[in-house]
Length: 601
Image 1: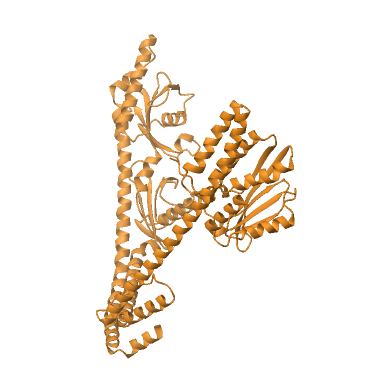
Image 2: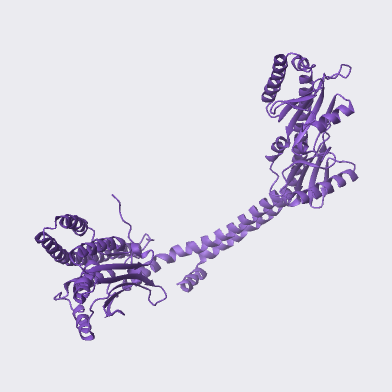
């Protein structure tokens, strides 16, 4: 079909004219796209550099604001009279001393709650040599974890001291927190009463920068003057990130500490705070991040041009196809109907006689499909009626044998067994008659058969044991209702009882043959009864091939229902078991086996 169609395109003057117009319009677009990409690359780079510098300035402003707040809080609380009055020599009255400490801790707790993002407040009393905290129990300076910080502050003798993780690398509490320590009272000309410690967890600084988006490779880092990382958004492992920041700081110092510098293929903005902490903020954007926006523009323009070419070409082909398509659609519809595919439809109707022909073909295909569907429904209904007719033959036969058993117990006046037997009989009747579904799970049929064997064992002194070996998940496979009971009944009455053994055994095996060609599911019923000789087996095989029921109504009935359910490919095999009894094997095509879910009411 494509060869005649392209021949049509090459002969069409209208199609050629469209192609020339499309080519003429593309040349100005290509020139304009090149200019746009060139200008956008330089513009994007300058804008990113400016925004990177602004970003560093904003982070520095945040850090300086935080440090200024540290200093203001320390001066404010070190001058509070309630705190200074609590830092006195121990009282001789124990109650008064406890109240004084309790009031001081309450003040610290209130201050910590009001301030909000401060990790904690601690006060060291020079008079009692104790450390009181907003969130910990009082302790002596000797046993306090704040001892190294307080002793260093006292040794320097100033009004305040700032300590971070780079000042004392071996002090555990400085690894995750930053401390600002102030004298109480703050003025050095007054006698020292104690020390105030205000701490902030480094995660607070991490939160100040973690929402900054610099692409997948860009990062912002907050460092101490010695280059120790306080917080960072870098995704590198710590050792590699430390090496990166050290090289940046070294290059920054060599160049005279400029606000921006180039490091390899990256643009780096660096700024140091002017407060007492002197921390350094580094913002790095790799060149691929710098050019990402320009690359997006370049790709967008390129894709646009490619899309325009494709759309133009497809438009030309589509226009020609609209002229060529209706006739080919009608031709395909006729070919499909000729091959028996009545679901094919003409989907494109030209506004001419060819379109009318396509509509008529669709109407004809729908009508033929409806007739076939009605015929299929008629066949399905016939098949269901046959299954029900065969099912109705099993129920009276089973009830006759069971009632005969009850009659024998009645003659013996064994009322206990009659009561038990009637209970099982009612349960079996409910299964065989009240359940209108003609297909059941194999597991349901197995439970029914087990109850049936228990009923038989009450009647006869010969006991029958059922051994079931069912491959998962075939216990949920759908089989005809009462599809196993006639086979078990035949095994008992025609195999086990005539042999007059103390105990009979029936084996039920269900498994799949996945390696076979074709794949199949096997159902085997084997007993250790008297069995059949080869002549009897052959006679029974011939009987099973006939349509009339005749003798052996149980086995013949089951086989007919198996064929109706699993199709004509299903097979039945008869043989002699190793124990001498009868072996019945059903070979069912695997693609006809369905797993059934039990509906719980």
